Image (cartoon, helix red, strand yellow):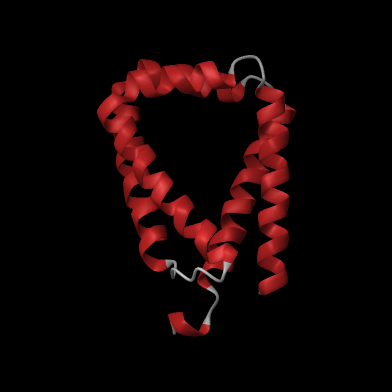
Length: 132
C-alpha cells in the first residue's frame, strides 16, 4: 500500500501544516517561542522527552521517505527527517548548550522567524498539494 502513495508529499503536507500553525500562533501571541525555549532550558525532563520524540519521529520520517535524487521533495523530506533525529540527539547530549545557541539565534527576531516559518509552511503545503 505504501508504494501507491506519495509519501514525501504527505510528509511535506504535515510539515507545512505544522510550520504554518506554529507561525500563526507566534504571530498572534508574540513571545511564545522565546518562553518555550526558556522553559526547555529550565526543565531537564522535558528536554529528555523532547529529545526522545525528535529521534523517534526523525528516524521514522527518514526511514519511510524514499531516497530519489531526481525528486527534490523526497530529498528534502529525507534530509529533514535526518535533521530532526540529529536535533533530538543534540538535545539529549548537549541540551543546555544547544538551547542556548537556539536562544541566541532567535534573539529579538522572533517575528522574522515566524514569518519564515509561515512562508515555509505555505511552500510545503503548496508543493504537497500539487503532487497529491
